[in-house]
Length: 312
Image 1 (tube, helix red, strand yellow):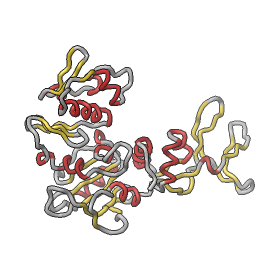
Image 2: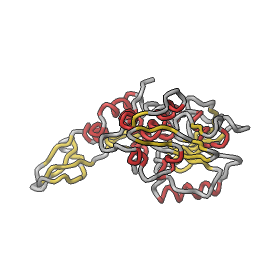
Image 3: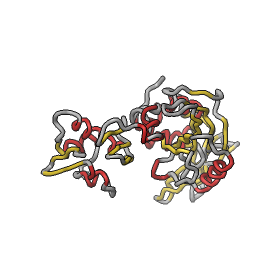
């Protein structure tokens, strides 16, 4: 099995969110060449025809135009503004698509999984039933669906109608390539929507962590230490009976550093060092900038004179 990187995993999830469900290989290689090659080598992206559109330089402006097949020349191309034929290499417009069955298998490799050998389509090209998994805290296997492009109103409307027709007996997990902040709010409370990026075992792995997923679905069952505790990835912090959710790799890494210090004998750390280790750039030089508009982190994190520490 070819190992991935965080960039490759991010690129794969972005490819899943494209409108057509496929992208030009050349475009992916322009964005992240090494990551694109890793996904192709791993078989997570597979060849699927062509997307005959190119960005032509004509009149000093980038203009997306269609590339047409010319039987006489036996090649793709287009005519510029003065009528000249411009050849387009086939490799330039070659397209690839996600191998969803393989992607689902890698996402759920750490779980005891049951169901058909291939996922069944529920909404063609957008939603799949991928079987059931065993989760700590449940008496029976939990059904799992996967959905993409949940921020698209048309997709969400169709999925919402499907949830109305097919409610789960207890709870259903709906994994998605859509980022957590773009998932609409649902009234179907027994359907738990979870962005794949938020429950991975590590930033560079496509495998979902059973511990992290379980903590997100059953947050009240996870706290062992009082007055403060956290999930494995620090995506959840339990503070005096309240559950706080943190998204984004950098925020979770920042919290991991602070909690590692908190559980040790040296809880106080330098703010600059924490921000640098968490991967923030030079423009993010305070905790307030790191956490953005939210301020609930100040309930358990203190800072003074360039230092910071957890004080629940």
